[in-house]
Length: 332
Image (cartoon, rainbow, N blue to C red; front, top):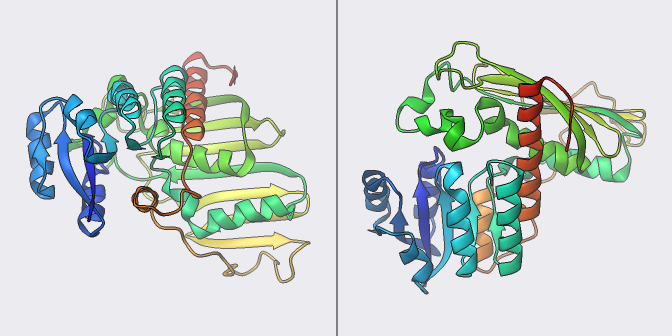
């Protein structure tokens, strides 16, 4: 029998992709959909063959619903997540978890206290190149790492991708962030997954074509990790190409990803000369959302993002926005 799910908010631009993934499976189904925008809820419910509820409390009170997918506007996350956790519902919450440190920490506390399965949309962890870099760092094959870089950019503002029903994502009051935070949270997750906690940050952000008013369309961040590594993070909606997405540099090794190809040099690994693409990579994980669906239907939770990790990313991103606004370094 298929496991019953519910949507608490269907505002996020990734909602159609999640619906497609659910419909492709036979072990889960969506029973109910809620959104403060009734028309939006009815559209998605029709696609899913689900019922529309007028009050999110109906989701928490339905014992048949075992897991809830929160794709609301970011500023609506906290009350939905707190209620769902209190009701013992497993939770997929679209990134970023919170508007900043305070609400994200409260949500993480509630999720941990409820002992429910949690996941968010940091799908890049499962990509083979990132798995490989993490393992090589663990093995010490870069020596002392001195600098890292991650870049996540697309042409969303240039192409006005958000005009067709997703404009809230360009409003920091509802989204908490603009382009830098929207895409940069994925890069931040990878950098922190590779290197741990961040000590202090600074950043700069701006508009390029101002297609969404004063909302930042691109930015660059500088991070100093607790272990002393210096990192840079680029993210934006105004790039026509983003060829070099990752770089790790150390005293005994170096790696970078260009057009999806990994180039790896290390004195510890035979054949790692950095001249030709390194293809000995692990298998890709399923998409982050698929990992959640697998987990709630009895599969492994090993590769899920923890609520505490998600909250830490909201904390660091909030600090980078404060640093950009105040033009200074901010201690995390």
